[in-house]
Image (tube, rainbow, N blue to C red; front, side, top):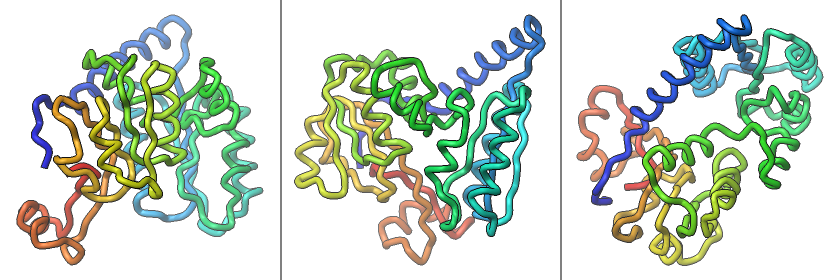
Length: 266
């Protein structure tokens, strides 16, 4: 288990940002008469996706955005989704569009993501936005990587010149985080499922960011003293899948809920 010298409160930072956005929305409405609008497209009945979309809608309500969700049947085609996106692209009251992933197997994910207007692509997955991120142009950036950088900056953690190791290279978190760190002049090491001697790379990190979806992958002896560690992982472990140590450490969770949430860092 990692010994924490300094706890960074993501909850506090998140609330600070929400408060700032709320004031910006009030000013936008007062000066321009505009209320930002977000549309979320949800295909199928994936329980986790429903939770994520609901969370995003609650966030919109908290800061004064207008939000709506378009729920589509699991059996719809790519063309069906494209038609919905075309309508949303052309609506002046909708300023941001997101398609909740994952999509059913019959849906062409690349076509769907490319169909969103880049200026409305709030997830930052459109090839235009990815290309602009690579070339350091202003663009929409995936939320979690942007949040990581914002957290570091708000805590006055120096990024420039530091050794930053990113464990996990997903398109949603890992790769965009790598690009953002490079743009901040960090020296970046990328680790993934084929990386050998992972500990060597994590021990070299001044800033260690872990986003793998592997519960407790990183142990305390894999982190050097004084390093900043950001654990992006959220793993739901049910009682029947937990080992004895975890059962004891999260006894209250298992007794009340039958499951617990843990990160990628122990």
